[in-house]
Amino acid sequence: MSTFATKALTHAQEVCRLYRACMRRIIRDNHNRLDMRYKCVVLRAMFEETRNIKDQETAVNLLRKWQLYLLELDGHPERGFPAEPGGTYYNNDEHLLSPDFLLDEWAEEEKAAYPKYFAKREQLKKDVLEYWENKYGTSVKEYAK
Image 1 (tube, rainbow, N blue to C red):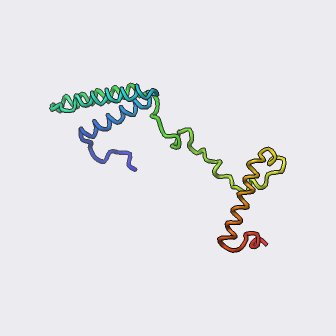
Image 2: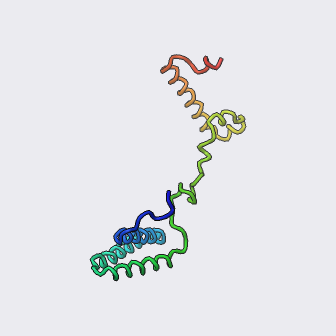
Image 3: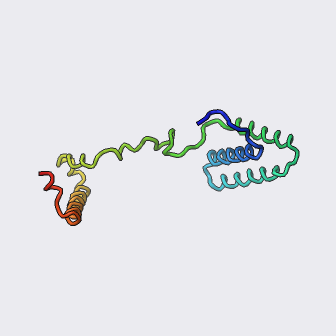
């Protein structure tokens, strides 16, 4: 991915990017949903007021003023998704990596702490073995010999 702009943006594209950045800023900073929606509607109304400005110089000056205002307000990074880098759940899936057979190697004293879980687990293992025998006709235990 290139770090340099490969083409110039039109004024409309810059306004759209500014609008999206302002919306993200409002969403990030307002935890009350009603306040957030109200501010989003007010922001949209402000952008709609200036939509039909014909003088290009006025439109560009207004755009620059909004961009500078947004830069002044931006004190901390944008809100990200939990599973993205920097999020609270990023690289937090180690529990998915532990193999199932490790539970079979627990000592009886450890299993005694969770009797319902291990009883259900043993029943499930029997059901899976029975399903395997019905579907394929032979037990896994015969192959292990």
